[in-house]
Length: 124
Image (cartoon, one colour):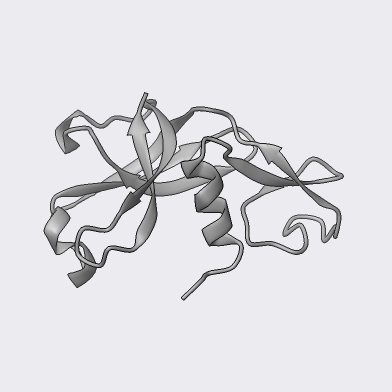
């Protein structure tokens, strides 16, 4: 089953061509979108996503939902990439070593329990 817009966005991230959507007023948002959620503009263009961002906030999950029990403990983080913020599972770092300000880059990973693709953030 395809999640139109989101799957294509994950494909672009996996191919090193990450982007966000920008309206003619300069507002950034993430796909799938048909209009700018900030101003209602229908003019959206794909703009290259900065290669790295910084963790703004995070939480370490010790008891996850059934889809994530194979990954406990894991960290979910929100990272600032300039015009947009990305929320993803932080990988390749010990949960005890995560801190606000950590530089990360977007990538595509798999949920170990379901096999579904998901946005992951990796330390840079």
